[in-house]
Image (cartoon, rainbow, N blue to C red):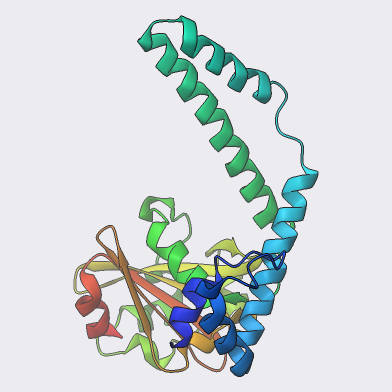
Length: 246
């Protein structure tokens, strides 16, 4: 079992310790005990999960949610199928709204310690490109020109100054409570999104062996880190397109 496989399993390990005797986690727990970097990641993941659970227990659901669910259950026994479906969907929608509200509240107000690079990569995979609101690379001076120059390899480390990017109005998003800067740029007619964060904010131990590639929904991302920064590059041309400019 390698660290990636162990992380996959340990993300499902409950912070209460109720899974300690489950043989499904035995190998992954041994891996975390024997690998300091994985052990640090696991401790942070458990602390994050425990804090989220505690905060969710402390927050009250919207008024009327219980009654809406019970009403849907009662109607399902007495009303035609069309109205029954409507009541069920209303109850489900209310439940989803509560979950989204709690998740958003937590991510905005209760940041945790260093996050795994996988979180930044996962965000880049699902973040809609239309959400970009900051200046594109062609308005970012020497840094933007460097990004758009096809002769430069992005993995070499663009000359980025995060303070300057903030002053120039680059879009900033929060991931696990940390600032992540997004820059859109073009190479040979294709659009890419580059996400930058301080390495100290994003524990990049899983990038030590090289860039990490992920694909989903016709998008591809690659994550890596250098001594100063953590990076995620997203494009719609597949992993090979990313490799050509990486």
